[in-house]
Amino acid sequence: MSEGSNTVGDIIVASHSGPLAGEVIVPGAKNSVLKLMAATLLADGRYLLTNAPVIVDVDIMADLLTAVGLRITFHPAPAGEVGQHIEIVNSGAITPVAPFELADRIRASVNLVGPLLGRCGEIDIALPGGDDFGGRPIDMHLRGLEAMGATFDVTADGIIGRASRLQGADIDFDFPSVGATENIVMAAVVASGVTTIRNAAREPEIVDLCNMLRKMGCRIEGIGTSTLIVTGVEHATLQSVTHEVVTDRVQAATYVAAVAMCGGTVHVARAVAEHMGMMLSRFTDMGIAFDISPDGITATAPDRLTAINVATLPYPGVATDYKPLIVAMLSVAQGVGIVTENLYPGRFRYVEELSKLGADITIDGHHASVRGVEHLVGAPVVAPDIRAGAALVVAGLAASGSTEIGDVFHIDRGYDDIVGRLASLGASITRKRLTA
Ligand code: EPU
Image (cartoon, rainbow, N blue to C red; front, top):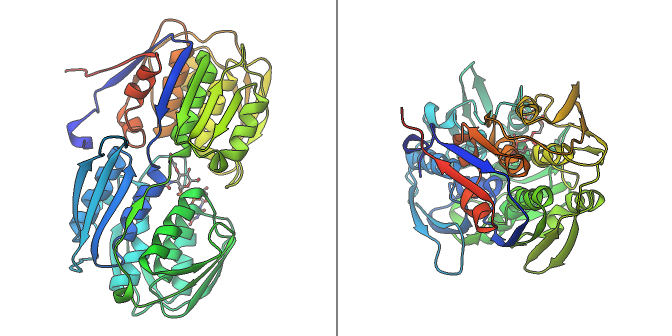
């Protein structure tokens, strides 16, 4: 799949559904696989990433890595697995210049900066794109790398960075940035000396990246904590590996939200409850019953959801990526819920779309006050970004009549066959190609 071939004109038609039943198998996480792909720049050899999601952002990252010199082949997952296998061959012939038009399309392109500077001593890349939630600066990435000896020329469009050999440093983050933590770790594993990152992010996807780097021979301590200690090694001592991508907790939560809004009982296979602890606890407060097993989680909807107040926070708090789902659920819950966004002040753009379905939501700064209504009513809406698009799909299933969701290409960036998976649970949902 590629964004060019797609999808730009496609719509998803979600019609009133429920109760849902059955099992959905969740593939690997977008926000892990993209960083694992970037990490293969660090050492020569043949890598295999299994349980990888089939999503457009993976295609864009593959194009970026191909442009800098890696060879990438996609293989369908063998029977019994989901997603795809990504085979990556790093022959060592790397040109650290990333085409602007590709880097500009995804946020994770910034994750090339750390490994390319560490490996090649230079980088020329566009400023990262991705979802528009207002300003998304990369000052913490650059300050951390500067502390390690890199210098940068930053223009309105791009970044040119240089470093002879990066040196270990003590880095204290003001905020546990996911991307900055990943970038500094990927630079530090091949730097000279020890790098200590304090107030590091500790999302499950960062743990996944650190675990793969460790398998490659990198020396990282404190994995999963907010202090990471990385001892650099020569990149030639590292080796390529096979690694299974951690399950996508946001896709998992999306299927929980679907059953919560449509009714029924659904098994979300491969969901890792431990990675979703705070979210599951808040879902429980809303009335959803969970049965947790090593194989995943089974969610049973209440007759009607109960409103809660919730604030987004870095892991282990409730992730900002869950928020559009929570707002959609609150829009049909009993009572009033206040949702506070602490990461991206501009991440409420989808509220206008939910309101078209009859949701009663008031925004005040970074708070949304959601007064639950008895029923949403289907209407044409537009997906403003990945997670908001998924929330509109789920809301459409709970609304009476039919909801047409446009700009589906946003959803394709992060969701692996959301239509097929929801349809397999009994949802009334299709995808249509609009022709001019
Ligand atoms: N920030 C700065 N300076 C920096 C870096 C971050 O001010 O140098 C601020 C950001 O502007 C934002 C906050 O810190 O307000 C959090 O940013 P963070 O760096 O943690 O996020 P990210 O790495 O840019 C990743 C995910 C996002 C997810 C966030 C938070 C990827 C590719 N993206 O972004 O995922 O919302 O972490 O968990 O991993 C999505 O998947 O839909 C998505 C947007």
